[in-house]
Image 1 (cartoon, one colour):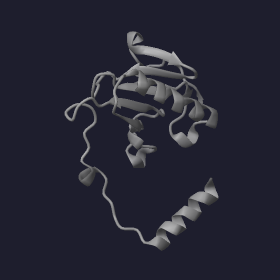
Image 2 (cartoon, rainbow, N blue to C red; image 1 turned 90 degrees about the horizontal axis):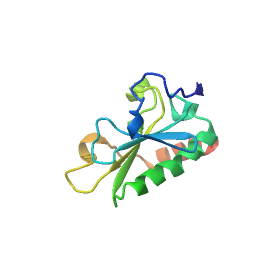
Image 3 (tube, helix red, strand yellow; image 1 turned 180 degrees about the vertical axis):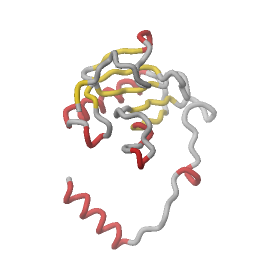
Length: 140
């Protein structure tokens, strides 16, 4: 991967008047906002998935996302990492890591999710959970 070229034409290229820089990241207002203040935060380092992003950039972006969320003034908000999609199989459409900060000031604005429809769940056995925990611990 490489440094992000701010002048490169892409979906993530913000309008100059909506862009501001924080540390090694760029934040800009979404051109199709879900609510007022809907902001995208992207690392200047070009990485397709979180796994591709060097740790120092990942460590830097969290506090920036927090600052943007606080700056919106909203008491409630959603933070999504590229809509949680990393890779084509996971429905990633934009080939650059980015985070959405979506203020939610009422029940009718911001992100609206129906957890029963959008997050299919299943029961997992204690043995299965224990096995997965060990696998993750081994990789961390």
